[in-house]
Image 1 (cartoon, helix red, strand yellow):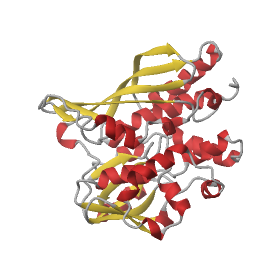
Image 2 (cartoon, rainbow, N blue to C red):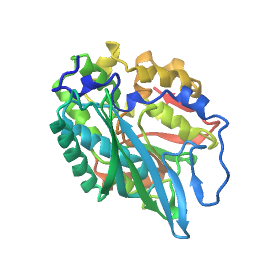
Image 3 (spheres, one colour):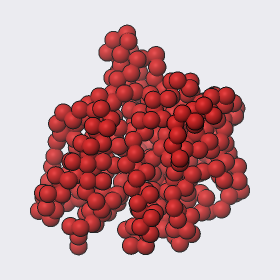
Image 4 (cartoon, one colour):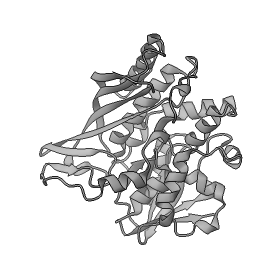
Length: 344
């Protein structure tokens, strides 16, 4: 039975772990097409983080939508995380978010309406921090609570940063620690330590605004946000069709507290198995790491960090200006055939 004091009891899944599996999505979308339009600069036929539509020679509209079930029990924090996560796709493309509309599924017969008020307050706080206007939204009565936003951003058509254009010689920077999916699984099992839950909540609440503002300054060649398909899944999308391989230095991966302990206990979200099943073939040398490391890199993240590919000579200055404690240089880019190499 759902517990009003624990939002996570109002859904079967949590956060981006509720996404349909990548294999299922690939099968559903395979072969679908639409008439070509010169104004469409990015759409569902690729693996970009958001769609882009040119509206003039010097402006394009960046559009995305993201919503999910609760990943934390605090309603205001859930609202803020949902907003931060929805904004992230705009940031990953190098765009500036300007407006949002809300998507809400709410169990009105089971959850007091005061909780919705708190969810909206948290969301508005994050949107205000992002200088993004909330214009409206749509709601339905549902047994499971789900919340998020469709977000519009703007960008110059020539300044779009895509997720599939890393360059050999680049370094890879990850701006947030990994492990939100695992910690949430431990939370639902009532095993997670308060320190781990708090650290995960603060990480998910943080906007990707700061690193996004530095992408053009430091000539980033590619960028994506790490969400439901995990580091390896989104990394594979970055490498595919780019003529490169991504090298991940396992020892450099930033981790949230207790993540490897929970993984060793078998507290692995279902999404991790779906991700691994679909993308394990993109790992060149999976036999060189433990099963626990594979669980980690396929762990579905909610409101994860940006994975940025930028010239090696710009990395130090980028990190010094970013001043984000969890951010780390986690690897490099080499010529290849679109796969991931694990350096243990």
